Length: 493
Ligand SMILES: *Cc1c(COP(=O)(O)O)cnc(C)c1O
Image (cartoon, rainbow, N blue to C red; front, side, top):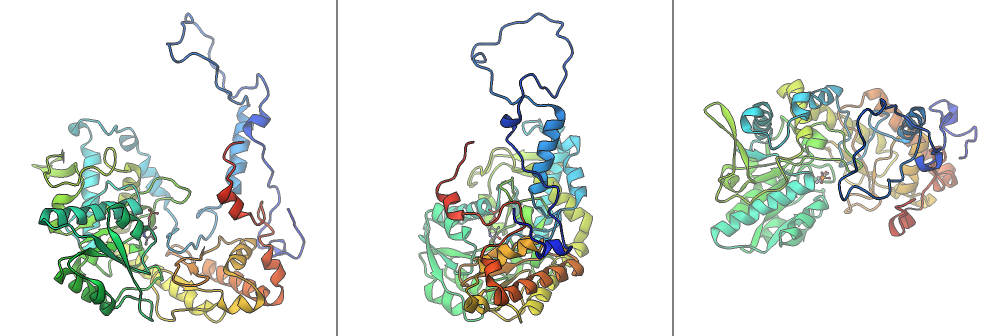
């Protein structure tokens, strides 16, 4: 690792000392070393059952301290929202309050088996029931399900609802309208349902126009999937008009609500013509995510679509919470059991600890922080859509092109200043996109530090582009060969 004295970290912003290389557990293994001591055996040895015999697994032999240090060191190589600002656009990497973890770890929740009899898990069923009600309140919809396992899975559930709706009407349709500012998972979900995606372009100010929808919406089109706020971080101001056009030709409006963090308490999708929406509990409602862990992508629908929701549903009958499977129009199950319960507990805890005013403030602050960054950095980075944004803003590398510096170079260099890079090259509608989502949980001081770092990188792009081309210099590993990593992954040591 290079560590010259003129690097930003050496100037006192951060240090990279005392970070060790780490061997594999198998390399550290020494025969006979052991991290546990069991009492003397005082029963007769009996042979293992058939099928459990054979060679013992090749487990490394290590002391307790070997194991503790190994995993502690690995954890120190990691970067997470608990270690610094994580301004990854489209991901809402907000701070996750620790009280949510405490509630999710309560033994009554962690010990509840999903096959328990209803009378033994009334508390868990009540939580599911109440959380569905809260999400309906937040979105302005009539019914919700918590089964889908992630945002994209929620989209699939929502598309299946739309599919079931048209099937029930007796005329299945073949197409879905998807604007170029929709999230990339949208066309994938529509395709999985057998629909053809009809791409429409957003207007000159980055939002969809009613005319563009009017031109393609017909009686063979099942509906539209619209991400609002869209992936440019802009509010789709024409949504009401667009919903009217789609409805007037028998279609339904799917709202991708993964960006609900920008509009809680301010805008209710159900009130302006959205029929189905998914939320990302693991973004807006504070669950640690990234790295492929479990998610939760509930969908909420208008009354007319409630019969199609996945079964079973939790209902309240005479004060008792009960699982109802007998639903003739249901699209079936989206997941084993009831969804990712631990994430529901975290979301429930988050909603209850903030309340309605608190959630509204979350959105106001998320929008304020993003607009602050947009206004302060727009002299330094090209801003393709110069208008008020929602919870994230999108810049490009256009101003740096003359120095041969790209979005990727600047993102990598930011790491030398101690910041996780923003999202790069997304959304696809913007060439060389740099998408910054600060979230509400960052302080002004931290945001100012981030912008100072970004300005320093922009200055270097002009004065010393070479240092960006080979960045990052300070993290444990320098620039990786991402093409080889994707094409020839080494998955086994
Ligand atoms: C994150 C995101 C999704 C996908 O959610 P996953 O949980 O990653 O499947 C969909 N739409 C938008 C707008 C998103 O930001």
